[in-house]
Amino acid sequence: MPSPFIQACRRQHTPFTPVWFMRQAGRSLPEFRALRERYSFFELLASPELTAEVTLQPVRRLGVDAAILFSDIVAPLAAIGVGVDIKPGVGPVFAEPFRSDADLARLRPIEPDEDLQPMLEAVRILHAELDVPLIGFGGAPFTMASYFVEGGPSREYARTKALMLGDPGLWRRLLDRLADLTIAVLRAQVGAGAAAVQVFDSWAGVLAPQHYERHVLPVSARIFDELRGLGAPMVHFGVTTGELLGLLAAAGPDVVGVDWRVPLGAAWQRVGAKAVQGNLDPAVLGAPWEAVAAEADAVLAAAAGRPGHVFNLGHGVLPDTDPDVLARLVDHVHARTAT
Image (cartoon, rainbow, N blue to C red; front, side):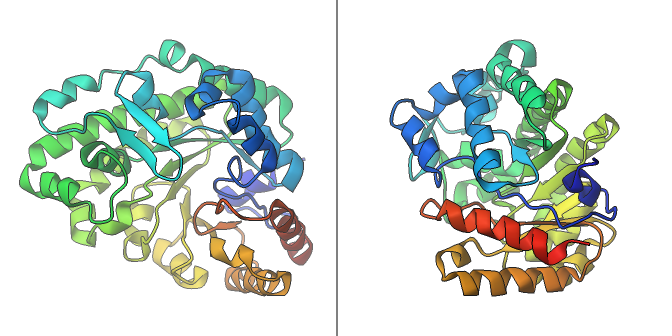
């Protein structure tokens, strides 16, 4: 049977609306928390078997229509020796943030077969075991650069914007290096068995449209252009990107992810002839079931049965989300949209 997720990404008719959740593999699942009591984040990534197990956990428990590889967008940076740690409750933290042209030397070309061996072996294991597609993923250059320049998550992204506007030449060189990294990672993931890829530009929404168009879009577009020949559907996602949706679509993905701040119908008008993914507010999942079902139905009503909708959240699953609610939501969306 063809995959409903892949069909939806290609804007084909599906027997029901496919569902998966960003951050479905991880912190909301008790079986994952049990593993985290024994292993650090990077210890999990160093083991192909553990990476595969964490990726499989939500597929078994929730019945989703796609798996997403358990990893982090900064994992390839760690693999090439850029000092970065994942701090619980914080996110990626760099010991030595990017400050000057000399720091470009720290971004050596990645050798996937050597640097990403555990990740790619996990993808091969999952390709053999999964009965749903595996989504590989990587970081968009802007979001990776923002972490690297700021040293970690930020509210204002002041250093990032100052570099982008104050030294556009260095900024472009930094983004080009990061784009090369993401292209190599995603190409290797697809080669190992990933059926689709998602490029996370999580923090692009902090930019004004004119700054995104001038300083980010050309590099992001290069990623999609160079991966198009692989035949794997490509998803582009960012948070608070309502004013950027048309530009995210212009970068060339097959699917544009939509957060909850923009009604799905309005978002679809902005992205044009693309599939869309989204866009239930993750916080809704803490409400009583009747409210969850009503909000999910509103998303489905906005999609209006058009081919090319992948049901997802508008951002990642929150840590205290009840997995039983996620599983019930999958069943609800399938039942509501079955044809």
